[in-house]
Length: 152
Image: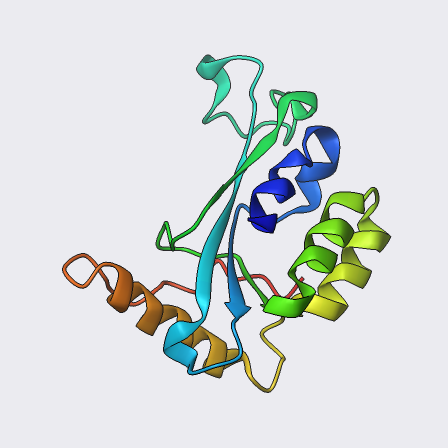
């Protein structure tokens, strides 16, 4: 599927992205038929010894080796951001996503597909993701902690 192509973005540009983002692909039918994906930002470090040091942010990071993982289910408990895209726009979504090369381009992308906390439909989407998690993993599902959710 097109979402797999979104993993092609790597290196320093990935630092603009949320650590854990959920994507809702609207299929055009009932909300239960929509698809969910998780975009995970994999951070590279120069040394595992320095993972918890906070003296100088980024000092021990190795941004050039940052990557992403995309899985076709909801993973994690603390989503940082939601994206919502219609099925007919998924190719464009991935194309624009992979073309992001600056913070400004990322902001333009967010304006088109992102769901900020200030979005009037924020809770509609948050509720959908919680319900989707319950559909995917009925035993393990819980309510997502949105304390880390960024308005971006």
